Length: 299
Image (tube, rainbow, N blue to C red; front, side, top):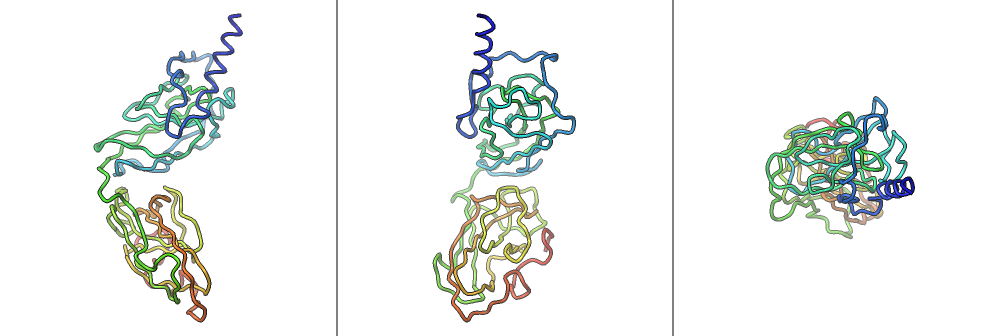
């Protein structure tokens, strides 16, 4: 009978969090479980590492900001799955705290946030001021893999401005009929425009990019440099863009001084109909005034 009860409790703990809301701890019962002894704990691969894709250490961010998690040498798996596999687990963020010893169950509270669905990105809201964020990887029962699979960064949080940050096309209007080269005017609120290569750790600043017939870039990912991803690294607010006749989508995407995107929340997409007979030079070529030269470089 004792064995049966112990097995039931273990399975209940392992299953917790599968249906938890993003950013919330999957189960309050997890914090009450005892830590495993060293002899009972599994060892992850020696080269396994976790890191914050976004933001980076010493970044300045708004009080409501995206976080993106990365892991090497491990596979992200939802809580309750593959609990005996020492190469699998999921992320937790510890706010203003320390990495947890191997085998310790990650608590569940406002300072210890579980991502038990296997999330690799989320949003956090913090009070203005200096904070540390510790990314802690743990197994399917929320037991920490230890400081070796944790990393800590420091961030400076500033208030969210009013009006709320956003980007938009001032012109043309969505659905407009236009001729090539298409005259573009960019708008931004909440963020300060800053040229590429400057203020790289200040995530309240950035510059524009236009994506032709593509999708917004996820937060923390570098915007490519090619004929359909056009950089305006001098902090330009207007440009002329050659486009072939036909319907096109144009996505305005803000990115930081390193060309790392702020994500879909700081992007805006419109559709334009380029009339036949217009200039058909390729976008991103020398015919597109205002675009950067080398990808990823400062102007």
